[in-house]
Image: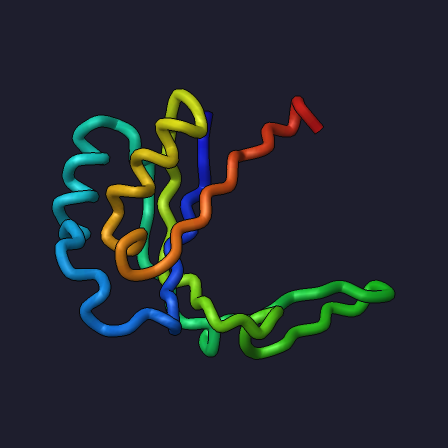
Length: 113
Protein backbone atom coordinates (compact mmCIF):
# COMPACT_ATOMS: atom_id res chain seq x y z
CA UNK A 1 0.00 0.00 0.00
CA UNK A 2 1.25 3.49 -0.83
CA UNK A 3 1.37 6.25 1.77
CA UNK A 4 2.03 9.95 1.46
CA UNK A 5 4.23 10.97 4.37
CA UNK A 6 3.99 14.70 5.05
CA UNK A 7 7.04 15.96 6.91
CA UNK A 8 6.17 19.00 9.04
CA UNK A 9 7.93 21.34 11.42
CA UNK A 10 6.67 21.81 14.97
CA UNK A 11 6.83 25.45 16.12
CA UNK A 12 6.21 24.37 19.73
CA UNK A 13 9.41 22.32 19.85
CA UNK A 14 11.99 23.51 22.32
CA UNK A 15 15.50 23.40 20.80
CA UNK A 16 17.35 20.31 21.96
CA UNK A 17 14.24 18.15 22.41
CA UNK A 18 15.18 16.23 19.29
CA UNK A 19 18.57 15.17 20.67
CA UNK A 20 19.47 11.70 19.45
CA UNK A 21 17.42 11.93 16.26
CA UNK A 22 18.81 9.98 13.32
CA UNK A 23 20.20 11.87 10.35
CA UNK A 24 17.97 12.52 7.37
CA UNK A 25 20.62 11.24 4.99
CA UNK A 26 20.85 7.92 6.85
CA UNK A 27 17.05 7.54 6.84
CA UNK A 28 16.82 8.25 3.08
CA UNK A 29 19.68 5.87 2.26
CA UNK A 30 18.13 3.07 4.36
CA UNK A 31 14.56 3.46 3.05
CA UNK A 32 15.73 3.85 -0.56
CA UNK A 33 17.88 0.73 -0.14
CA UNK A 34 14.88 -1.25 1.12
CA UNK A 35 12.67 0.02 -1.74
CA UNK A 36 10.23 1.56 0.76
CA UNK A 37 10.78 5.22 -0.16
CA UNK A 38 9.61 5.64 -3.74
CA UNK A 39 10.30 9.36 -3.91
CA UNK A 40 10.51 12.44 -1.72
CA UNK A 41 11.82 15.96 -1.52
CA UNK A 42 11.83 19.16 0.46
CA UNK A 43 9.33 21.81 -0.55
CA UNK A 44 9.49 25.60 -0.46
CA UNK A 45 7.71 27.38 2.41
CA UNK A 46 4.00 28.18 2.28
CA UNK A 47 4.81 31.81 1.55
CA UNK A 48 6.06 30.65 -1.87
CA UNK A 49 2.88 28.73 -2.68
CA UNK A 50 0.03 29.61 -5.02
CA UNK A 51 -3.51 28.45 -4.29
CA UNK A 52 -5.67 27.74 -7.36
CA UNK A 53 -9.48 27.69 -7.38
CA UNK A 54 -12.02 27.77 -10.20
CA UNK A 55 -15.32 29.47 -9.32
CA UNK A 56 -17.98 30.15 -11.92
CA UNK A 57 -15.52 29.18 -14.64
CA UNK A 58 -12.99 31.81 -13.46
CA UNK A 59 -9.52 30.80 -12.27
CA UNK A 60 -8.79 32.48 -8.93
CA UNK A 61 -5.22 32.61 -7.64
CA UNK A 62 -4.06 33.44 -4.14
CA UNK A 63 -0.45 33.87 -3.10
CA UNK A 64 0.44 31.82 -0.06
CA UNK A 65 -1.04 28.74 1.54
CA UNK A 66 -4.73 27.88 1.57
CA UNK A 67 -4.96 27.72 5.37
CA UNK A 68 -3.05 29.33 8.19
CA UNK A 69 -1.49 26.64 10.34
CA UNK A 70 1.29 26.72 12.86
CA UNK A 71 2.77 23.47 11.57
CA UNK A 72 4.57 23.93 8.24
CA UNK A 73 4.89 21.20 5.63
CA UNK A 74 8.61 21.02 4.92
CA UNK A 75 8.67 18.02 2.61
CA UNK A 76 7.11 14.73 1.62
CA UNK A 77 7.91 11.13 0.88
CA UNK A 78 5.92 8.47 -0.94
CA UNK A 79 6.24 5.12 0.80
CA UNK A 80 5.35 1.60 -0.32
CA UNK A 81 4.56 -0.43 2.80
CA UNK A 82 2.80 -3.70 3.53
CA UNK A 83 0.37 -1.98 5.91
CA UNK A 84 -0.12 0.96 8.26
CA UNK A 85 1.98 -0.69 10.98
CA UNK A 86 5.01 -0.76 8.68
CA UNK A 87 4.35 2.85 7.56
CA UNK A 88 4.24 3.94 11.21
CA UNK A 89 7.50 2.13 11.95
CA UNK A 90 9.18 3.80 8.95
CA UNK A 91 7.81 7.24 9.87
CA UNK A 92 8.89 6.88 13.50
CA UNK A 93 12.49 6.46 12.32
CA UNK A 94 12.44 9.71 10.30
CA UNK A 95 14.37 12.54 12.02
CA UNK A 96 11.39 14.91 11.83
CA UNK A 97 9.34 12.48 13.94
CA UNK A 98 11.82 13.40 16.69
CA UNK A 99 11.79 17.14 16.07
CA UNK A 100 8.63 17.82 14.09
CA UNK A 101 5.46 16.08 13.00
CA UNK A 102 4.90 13.27 10.49
CA UNK A 103 1.47 12.75 8.93
CA UNK A 104 0.73 9.54 7.06
CA UNK A 105 -2.05 9.39 4.48
CA UNK A 106 -2.84 6.24 2.52
CA UNK A 107 -3.29 6.64 -1.20
CA UNK A 108 -6.89 6.21 -2.33
CA UNK A 109 -6.84 4.30 -5.62
CA UNK A 110 -9.47 5.39 -8.14
CA UNK A 111 -10.84 1.86 -8.40
CA UNK A 112 -11.90 2.12 -4.72
CA UNK A 113 -13.72 5.45 -5.19
